Length: 251
Image 1: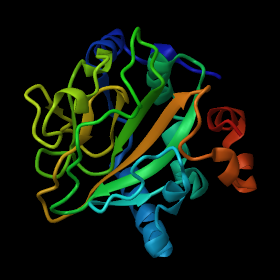
Image 2 (image 1 turned 90 degrees about the horizontal axis):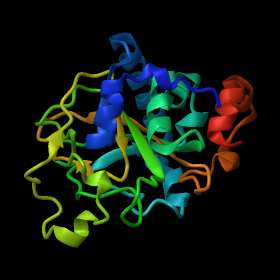
Image 3 (image 1 turned 45 degrees about the vertical axis):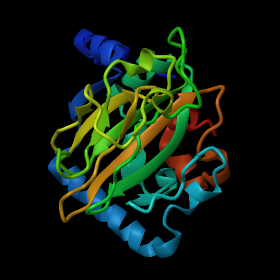
Image 4 (image 1 turned 60 degrees about the vertical axis):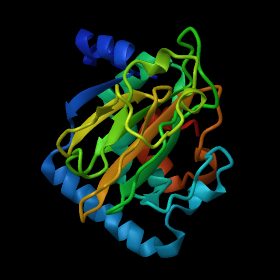
């Protein structure tokens, strides 16, 4: 796999190691964001009540249905516009820094916290605590709206990726604010890498608009994908994405 770890600064690497998350800055222009949001709206309207159905088919997603958010899945096969979400070099460098070079895309999904909703328990994206930095999963979150403290931005508890404890083992109210949590406030087009073993969750969207994002979620190559890419891959996608894309999708 051709990666460019030098595209992360030493400061970014240090923050990812220490806090479990890091901003890569704005990687999508406002025109890109508008185009992506338009495509997502078209897909959501076309799929209707079946939107996100691929999530329901996956036995590796513990909570596929979320009443408080609009969801779409398998974006790999829903347009060239989504290729950047799993091939962007700086993002891959961030994923590689956490997981090493032997990784693959687990899923590429859309989540939009609905007005008045979107609150999630603090959680990790793994079944237990991880010791000795043997991380199995890592996420990138692409902001398709400005993330604010009012519209359901993701919260992260810095440094918890190094704990062998899970939040449900030590916290009574998993929805309550954590004294050490950090809200990912940033403009649309920003991309964050976060170690998926860090304690995190969505917050309540108290505005009257959706809060939109795409998650390109990766796992080490020895783990099953949330969305079995080989099951869903189309020939059109396979021909378009090239050698790197085929490797990352493990198809």
